[in-house]
Image (cartoon, rainbow, N blue to C red; front, side):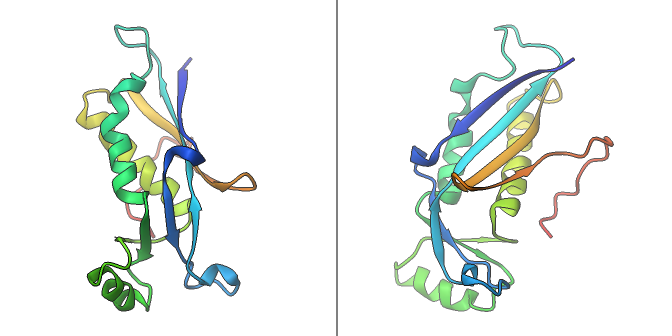
Length: 160
C-alpha cells in the first residue's frame, strides 16, 4: 500500500516558456509558447514524522529550479540546427536561452521527473519517498505524463 500526494504548479504559476519542435512537419516547428502546468505525484509506503508523504512547504527550492528552467525561458534542443541563431539572440539579450537535450511536454515531464527524484535524494526523503508520476500540460487539451515502469527497472537518465 502506498500513500500518494500531488503538488501542482498551475498555468498561473509563471512557467511561461517558448520552444519549437524543429523536426515537426506541422506548425509546431515554429517557435511558440505556453504557460506550462506541472503536476508531480509523490508516493511513500510510510508517512514522515509529521504524517506527510512530502512537506509541500519544503518544495521551495524545487519550485525555484522549475522557474530557473522554464519561467520566461526559450528552451532549445541541443541538436536544433538553429541553435547558433538562438545563442546569438541570447547574447544580445533578446531571449533567455536554456539548452536542453530535447523539447516537448514528454521530454519536459521526463526532465522534471529526474530532477524531482534528485531533489528527494538531496533532501533526505529518498528512498522513503519517490516520484510516481509527472504531468506537464501545455493547456487544457494537451498534456504528457512520465512515470517509471512497473517492472522495477529504472529508466536511464538520458533524454533521448
